[in-house]
Length: 130
Image (cartoon, rainbow, N blue to C red; front, side, top):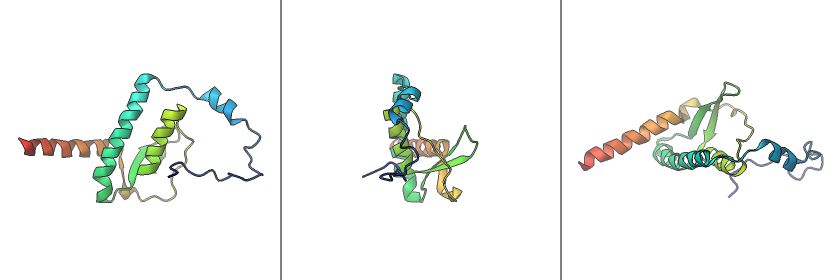
């Protein structure tokens, strides 16, 4: 299963980035994550699994994140968000991103909502066990 977006220029002899040496660019700009940052991303991956398990059956397609760089909300499906976190673990930096085309905001939740929902479910389960 290929989780990363496909390269639109893959196999194209006229690829405009072909002249760039990507290994030089990647090694110059990417810094490895610190152990604490790495653990944070691993924790986020684990949390994402829980959020998807709880919210996807309710019709939510993923998460929306307010981009600090461009001040535009970015809508990520569950698998794309997971792939981006895995890329961050491997490469030490986030991918270049663009806003989704015409998403329905009602089908996405913010991270904090997902966390609160999961916490509420966990608290309710703990209360029912008492």
